[in-house]
Length: 250
Image (cartoon, rainbow, N blue to C red; front, side, top):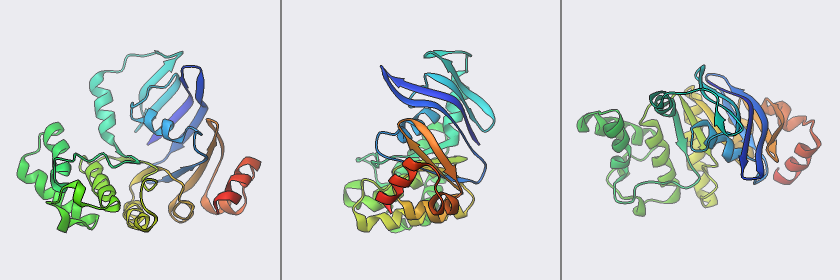
């Protein structure tokens, strides 16, 4: 579903991603962990064109959607193709980014109605189904200011699902939450994983990675240093930097 080849990303002279190679297969849940500033979030943002890579190739669903060298495009990719590709990727951010002037259900309805031209009644019916899935059908007509952080993040997950993505990207979705609210968001993510959704999750939640991930990837200073199934990753880490990181996190 996702394939990244020899990707570099510079911000000015700062080399944030360094020759990154990895893949995510259909139905996999890949958790990416590592210290702050290691390039994890930048990698996610490059996948959906929120940032452009400096060098390398990105494939989504087997389609080459970005190919660049020295900050220049090596092939012309039609705008429509990029838009379609972005539609395959649902993104959930650290901050919830809900529209404050719209209710929970209206936040879910907006993109399907605007982008997919779905009629209002159908969009609302689907939005209500998704709010029920995340346990918030009783909050449909509440504005974000009246929702807790955990509830807002669950609405944000439902909003991303409203566009029927094939892949869900999560950028530290619990990092802005009070500790007692983390569990309710992780429960929704576990439900998604069990449904077979392909997921790539940047997280500091080691318990979630151990329990739910198909593979865990460790990044530091823009480099993937180790990746393995969770039992091997946590039970028998090989990289010394990873060993040091896990001692502090677990």
